[in-house]
Image 1 (cartoon, helix red, strand yellow):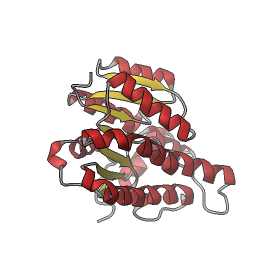
Image 2 (tube, helix red, strand yellow; image 1 turned 45 degrees about the vertical axis):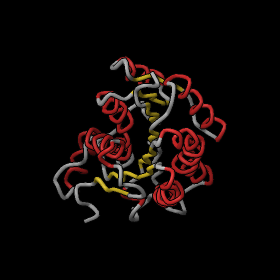
Image 3 (cartoon, rainbow, N blue to C red; image 1 turned 120 degrees about the vertical axis):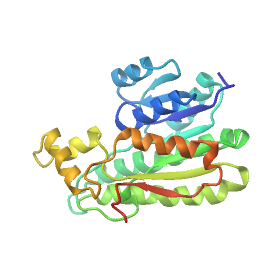
Length: 247
């Protein structure tokens, strides 16, 4: 397996992560798809012989070290780490509990750091890459999303700092910053306002300058480009894919 490029994608049970895993597999990568939902992760793996499932929780640095080690055993190497797993807490500062704050930072910021730290020695040998899935709300503020914005803003600057540190080692590190994407997270956000899935999508489409939200496959296409040799001179970037929302 090591003759083919190997990728590790977190948060691959559904949405953006699943789309990234499928796109990389279609492009010839071997992919370890890590997710918490066993049924969805295993179903994703059944869609392609190039996708290998990893089911489990990622809560601390030990879990990150274990996942990277499992990837090396399963795929024979690692050329690309995609830190996609994330959560979204809807609350302003007063309504954000200690637990919600700590959980958001742990999943959205600390885990990408732990996984990156574990992966860098391998990526150094193979001149690999890290792609962090951040958010347009890591580049601007958002209402009732204080913990989410803090975590994604931190992820963007962590990306840039690591890119500076490791550019001379030919490790490219970039962030992708989606706006609204047609995923279960979008529907869950709508549900907090009493909107069903169709209503939530229609409302999000109406707010977009292009008249629609981004598809998960479009985010996956940007990730695939950043992972390719065509992006050899792109590192330390935080690229929005938000239908002009930050224009």
